[in-house]
Image (tube, rainbow, N blue to C red; front, side):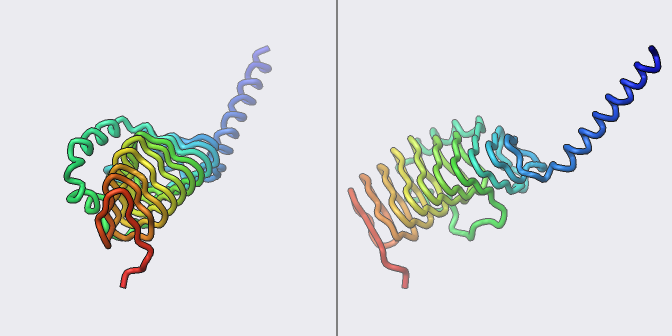
Amino acid sequence: MKINFLIMIGLFTGTMISAQDSVYAVSDRPKFIAFSPSKETKNVNGMLIKYYDEIDQEIQPKKVNGIGLGFNGLGVFFPVLFLVNITSIDNWGISDIGSEPLPDKMNTINGMQLSIVNMEPTVTNGLELSLSSNIGAPSVINGVAISPLYNFHHTTKGAAISTLANVSQKCRGIQVALINVCKDSRAIQIGFWNENEKRKMPLINWNFKNKK
């Protein structure tokens, strides 16, 4: 009886060790559900859940084919701060999103990004829904960005739609909001007040000519 019990313990232990080895062996393969921050998370074919952005440390780039969910609680304070300072958008609009080249390390989301606020450099190829997107992070939207308050991007290629403001360094497409600001525009702006490198106009603004 004791021999059988010891054999069973040995088989169970061997199985657990083998399972652990197999987990480590496939750790570089895409995950279906992953969490961030995590140095082990590189590729996700499914869902990435971000509970805290890598604000104060070097970003570990992630590629997501599916959905990125951001639940950073700090994000709820930023919309209020921007709302208080909305009248000074000429001063902070362009400078705060940065005119420097995009960083080498950026997240890539092919699909949908849903977040309170995104504070990491990210390229979103698809749909972005957020309370106030990409605060303090030079990011790119290739598709459609929708926010009930603000859209902030380094580059917008497609459509940026919000209630209060769309601010981009580079625009290729359309901006629709109460206030639209873009420094390098080949786009149409529709809103109460619109600014690009060529002119400032109410209701509708545009520019389709390259810089000389």
